[in-house]
Length: 519
Ligand code: HXC
Image 1 (spheres, rainbow, N blue to C red):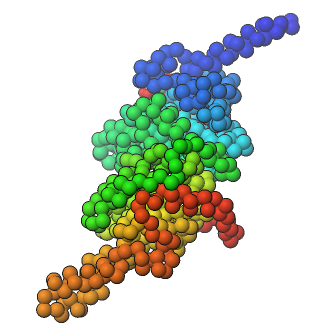
Image 2 (image 1 turned 135 degrees about the horizontal axis):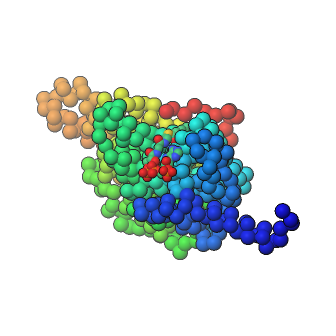
Image 3 (image 1 turned 90 degrees about the vertical axis):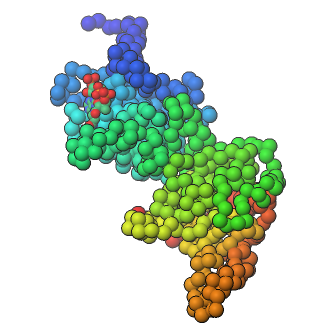
């Protein structure tokens, strides 16, 4: 063969590129479309800024020579990788291509993912994975399993250094679900995404239980029952919009600043309706979202895990253009009690915010921990301890506002001064005490009540006495456990000015390898 011309060489490259673009072939692409799913490259194009995607490793192929794979070597090996931008900010991406061996993960497929993860870590940029896969490529055996292990290791090392997001856009099964679980957030699409360790067939064979894949591991199940999915979308477009939105609050890495979003909303804005939102009567409920939306910039709050453990609300907002994390008890659900799921949900979010240097604003209205054998036997002691650990460990600015009840251990857990809160405010109707007045009076004055001629009248009298003494914010304020008692309408300004004052906060900790968080 003589020397080929540059035209011939370019034509060869062109042909290879076309072949890579073909993925698993026209028929497989049609099958993918028939399921209402976009292709791996279309998904990347929808997520990133138009025209920003740069693909790498287009020509990678597997080197498996078993079960006929030696004759099938599609270019790219079932995953599209590279980088691009979201709102002009660089991110690294990978997107599994179901049309190639069902998006299954083999040695080279895993290496491609590891390469973009390594680059994302080195460049200090988020990494977003799009999953659509039959799991470990069965023909590649332990090479596939080893590939997963290498990804898990990278997920863990990148945790708290760069934001990592997982969009589940098809099946993910077996141990493969653990890479998404190791990332900051799992996004799922209703009716399309499935995540489970063992599928419906195995469940049926082992336990006899008949359940559909969606009921077992669909977006609804994981968003409302297990808490595995942090976001649920009605379709892929909404899922990508959610990812872009969440990215807008986060720095590119743990040493970077979160993006500033200019606002015309004055920090001085005083919303007098806040006086009516939280009823003074502690037995009446309200929705804490109403409080949050009235104090943050432009009423804009982006909730995380909105469908699960609704007795606590977590999410992102801004004050004066700067991103913060919000944690709030929700009196509307279980009276805002802390339970296992709420502690789990809030503690992870506190650690996430701390890792990425977002100040944390905590709205407190908590009657205590949820009582019951179920809670005790499932470990509320160790699970609830996570929240104490997370707040105590956090070194970002911490601001709290006691809206109403703050009782006992739950008060201490919810960003109390003792755990390191920098600015603790309370509203005039706040009740900060060891117990609610009814419970407290019945215990402390038990003998006196029982000995009275009319015990129930005596009990009411003692409840009133205890209320007058403790059902207010001033006992705590006298001791400095509350820095200031504020009018409800002063909340936005108080938080804003506190955040300004805390901007230069620096905290040093004793050197250690790492702590041992309760689990
Ligand atoms: C190799 C696979 C594959 C796999 C699917 N394919 N999964 N090839 N390894 N794991 C191939 C199919 O053979 C088929 O190839 C093509 O992908 C499309 O698959 P279909 O079955 O036709 O698609 P569909 O009906 O939509 O079903 C999708 C599916 C099903 C639910 C994902 O394919 C399935 O159950 N696959 C196996 C899932 C599984 O058990 N994986 C191992 C999990 S354990 P052709 O050539 O016919 O088009 C695991 C361990 C990880 O992942 C451990 C980490 C530590």
